Length: 356
Image (cartoon, rainbow, N blue to C red; front, top):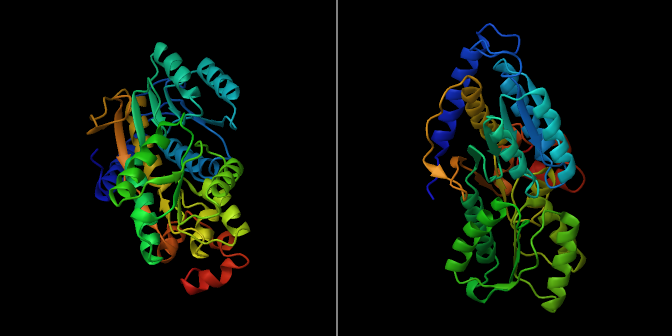
């Protein structure tokens, strides 16, 4: 799989800005630059939950709403709150009011039925962040590259600890297998780790749940007689659960993660998590806004170079690996509030790394 470069991501943002300016100058009241009615101008968005990651409500909602509204389009953004039945109900309500485009973040496969329903009504669907069977486009970060960066952080941590990867006891803590992204994260991580000789000593069932990850990891650790050299974890929320068990057993080993959540960044600064993969949500949202604006205006978007596991055209944005020294970059980008980040024992670490 080829990846877009950061230059490409910036180009996406630039192109989006031009499109937004063009649309905003049109005569609309929510109708878009082509003079369509309010129904045609509605962008319907369904977010998955607020538990698997804080990003959905803290960042994605804000960036999508701002971008689409500035372009002159009405938005209807709702959160399924981790409930597939609610997901379906929200979709029915949105479609009954009319949507010009749907931007869906899948939750446990609920997005596929909604994509099918929207398609039957001639409404284009953008799968956002998580691939969905039947979507017309997929906009996300390069998820295999996310996994590669996670795998590299494990290798870096083992090297710092003087451990031979081929002899290390490594536990794999993946995401929910119903989420295609989880498979791509694992693909990238395995590619890097197993090329260095790592084989998993234990691999509990994948979940997107910090508490369940803690329970699953504790059981795995018990099966390994309390011995572990590193833990590949698919995201920061799950990593936080794993770290509670490591703390309980007075263990500090390399742990991976992603999302650059406040908890994840705090664990990175405290040395409990080797690194997190930072996915600048603004870039992903800008790419989705650009695509949605084109579709709402009745334009045919350029064909992306990539396809997702379903063969859907895939616009991939480049992620970044963040260790302690790079945490400041997330703060300066506005994706982490230093007042929230630098609390308690983390305050001294923030000062050490120049975070104010």
